[in-house]
Length: 555
Ligand code: TEU
Ligand code: CA
Image 1 (cartoon, rainbow, N blue to C red):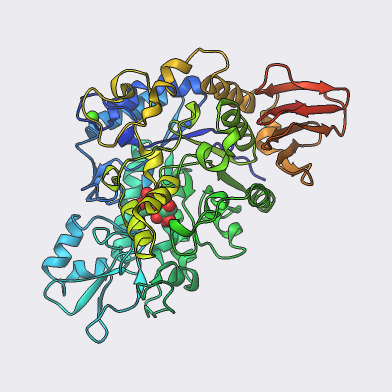
Image 2: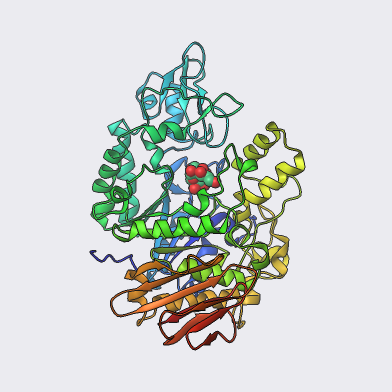
């Protein structure tokens, strides 16, 4: 496999609104990010993905862009952005922005012009489609609930929005739209960006017949993903996007790709793939409910382990996937994947180890490195997220009580990950001197950076050691390029694999169970590289793992 500059990088996702506020308006900002570059460098981060910072009405927290060439005032200025690029470069770090080009904001100039003249050229930038029998063209349900069609005022047409109605979908069939988007992407890359995380990209190809599907919910609608899964032709757009932009800059790209067709991995991340890598969302998909968050089944350990190993195996011959335990759309990984008896520092170090040493590009989401957890909100009004509000209603409509609907939100809400970063035990966790836009998790007194920095045994210091091990001169070859071979799969609650190549063999073994477990080593331990308990119990050819223990052993 041809080696690429980004193969050995460790990435960190910043959700800017919640990272650090430096001017007291309760909203994180670019100054805040700049001031924490040294913190991230010390953690071992090479690459930073920043969720959208473009001008936006923030209906979907910046994933609704009204000007692709401007920085949101809430976050700062273009000068500050340039300063961020420069400061990152000085520290040998790479900045990756979010690229949201399936849709824009309804406040974008293009959409405003389209509304003003629904027969004019700008209407062609979107999907303005005639209704059928006085109703929407099809029965698609948008990702955030309700019809994916909204009527265009003063006409018999509807416009398509796969997400909120304030996020009209861009018409990728129109070459002018593609050209304008490519031009914009190149403009940012020319500035010195390392690349992009590419939002919701699978959705760009539509079936222009807009056929309805069998309804799949009490609202009589069918999930719009059914159209995405049945239509062909996204590859043509993606190949062109790459050719016209990323390729020219040797940019790093990570695609957010759900609903990929069976066997399409090669097309996405193979040698000539559309992207450098895509996220492995296997574990996240496990808790998609049949009808919504309210009917999602709890995740079973065996399923979780097996989807991860399956993805590892699939990617091995093809390319690299990017591994996460959480992001801004998901609940906190420690709350979601750790059994309750492991929801402590030891467990958090364990899941960090089994995730970050997998084959692929690790992405750490802000706060994960200190073990931030889901946040209980007292009422639905405390939530901000558009998706959460919809899912709350979906649960109520299905007959659940308010308390049960709140419980579903507590388990699944995207706001679990969006509460402000916990920097210290000062007021508002040191995130802001004002009123934060979203409540701070009340556990900030116990879980915060200040407490953990430099404290032996803290989750944060463990993350530093873990990342340093992955990047160490002697072991990076095997951790980056070695294969991942699952082992002890017959043992209940044991998550274990080898990372190996011709000359090195490393065992990563963790016990997610409640009882201690003894594993017989295949060959004698040469060296214990890392563990989350004081005296690793390796005796002869056996290793004894207490509940929530993890150990990394060179064999
Ligand atoms: O997410 C796309 C997407 O598919 C999500 O709606 C996902 O299904 C859901 O969040 C899982 O809980 C991206 C962004 O990551 C998300 O924040 C945006 O809201 C969305 O696109 C629209 O831009
Ligand atoms: Ca601010």
